[in-house]
Length: 350
Picture 1 (cartoon, rainbow, N blue to C red):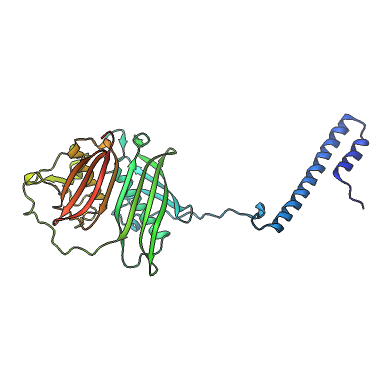
Picture 2: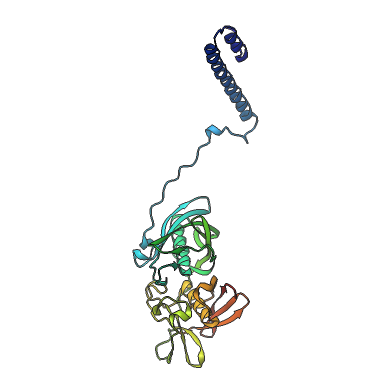
């Protein structure tokens, strides 16, 4: 049976029509025939293209990868003392080195001020990044082996114009996470960098980068005792940008030296578990408090923080010195005659 082209078939249908209703039906039939012909022609072209070039696969064979939802994080797996300290809600892979996360920051976090409209403490952003790193390390990065990793440097910046102000129960935050500088030796993870961008209501308000490296051997020198640190005077909490007196990490020693002596040596956020060494986020907070005290600025003036560990910092007795800079201040922490940590505090309008 000879094949009739769509145009010829349409002409046959039209030539045999006599009424307007019949013409309308025939026109629709012609459109269907033309559409079938176009589909056949397109399929022929696609088949030819697939044979000529491997760079143009047929689109109908491509499939989106199926994402399996990750289990919610458990507070014990992140090294937390209680469920109330958990800030990360979820973390899922978005690429080979990228992830998507959701955090929830409670309005009544221990470091936040007890006011109706709360701007979250910058250390909540730091702690969220640490928890995200711990979760990514346990789920997506190579195993660390027997040598645990700890954060050795951190840098963060916030935008006062887009920072969320919480008046309800908690702030929902979305996070874009990337890992880089991943170092593996003998099959074990020996270091990496994590960068987290924080968004609220679709607007980025902060970014935090943290570097992880193997923890050094514990110090052999004893921690300064009570008799070594006498005649101490703790500043008032507002003078160092703290929400309450237990959050104060500094004290004035004789001859006006500023030393790190926490008012609460077992602070649930700054010093969980009463450690002998000051963790990185506590060093960062001590530098923030020292800069605000030295410059006489409120906590809201801080728009950037950075700190780097160079050695162990004892929880009591380390001297902290502050030097003003154009955009804020620089601080150095000295223990046993050596610089154990240093950092910067960026202040708005400095």
